[in-house]
Length: 280
Image (cartoon, rainbow, N blue to C red; front, side, top):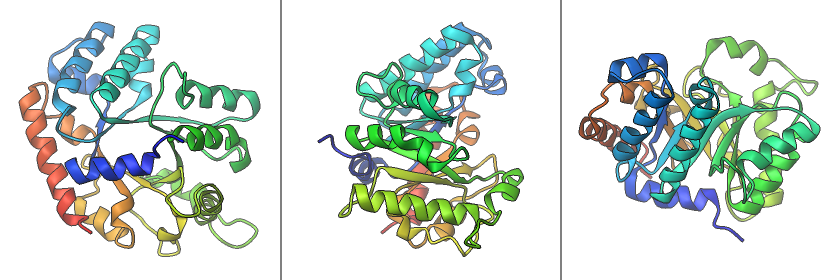
């Protein structure tokens, strides 16, 4: 049985802190860095990013869309980033937010979580809104391969509130119902440990109805920095389970590029802040 993602996260957290460094090569970031918004520019971004992240943080989160927009060459750059990061000992969370049904979902799962996956990630984000049951292949491969499935549950953007706070037949919100389902699945898959299914929960606009600790999994907390969330917000929202949260910052760290040493310094400072506010 492969070592679980939760175990590997705990090890990385003990060394580097819990910070997840989001690697989003948007047009704005590439222009700020003085590199072309092109496949060649992406390759340069990857070179700089690998130099900066290795030995600074334990986890990275590339946003697939910023690579995909450059076609097959962009996907090639993404694959190289993931492979070199994993070879350097980093955990890679692929922010790809897939979600479909049937054989299409199975193919997505095999693309990112299978042992022989072409773009193998340690964890990936998914949307659950075509039904939790549709994610069976994701869950199977994550459990088998020691990966993690991160289900978008409560996003940090206000536009998501109308769907995520809607009420289901039981009277509970969609997001609370999702956390309950994740908790049940994790209890079946890993009754004595953290399960392979986690949730994406933005550290803003939190509802006290949400019982985060009982989910028995990890949390990805996006929205730190440019989207307005602070380390103190993360500590407040996840006070019941601080050891299980993976706070993520992207643009607020990348703005200090392209100098790798400057990028390392800023990221290391934020990682230490999170280590202190989420100390257990």
